[in-house]
Image (cartoon, rainbow over all chains, first blue to last red; front, side):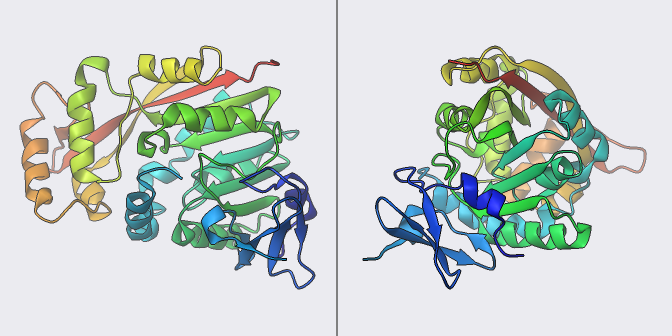
Length: 56
Length: 257
């Protein structure tokens, strides 16, 4: 099941609590403050700082 | 991340298959008691912290508007997602996250729950503080965990650490109440019960360090008289050894300030 809008509304970056934007290809959630991208694996967001990649 | 994150990940990847099949974990009476203590209703939005295979979050989802489970272990979340598909619950979602660093805005939930997890956490007050943070004022923080009698807690913890190397420390009811206070929560309401089963079945889904299982069996055998471990060990009519873990459900409202 894809990530629900209800869940997206309350999820934030665990590092700085910044809001997140779903990547257009639905592969991850990008923090609007620190630009970390948290991967989505098997429809489950992986909200661990050590699993995130900082994107430009 | 918690200092024992590696042990947690190793133990719970091993335990992921068997954990959900354990009768004590699925006991509908115990789940109903938890829902009652939490005063869960159709208006609630629930977070279950360290949700494991999703039994608790799924129990909430039958009653509340929306439930979310977070866990550190992908193997547990895979089980949870499978359970959700089998049950056909659509108001349920899963997130991989650390209990000490929850990826949610302040005051996101009306119930923040955790069952059989606090004793795995080396910083239980920090975990409760984080649960309080994401709970709305007037919402409830609900914790179910082992709560051995104060005078037996040290022996209980030694035995449990032998059975499960990721066990950190279970607290007495008074100790748990102090942890609530340390996290800025009022004194919780508490209900106690025993979670029972057979030792044979318990050990089938336990992963003690190599060589420790015979020691553990010996300890259990020696601990029937007087119940020094507060595990209510006994031999049934068929000669099988039974246990009854001392469990408490605690619930406190999250204050406005």
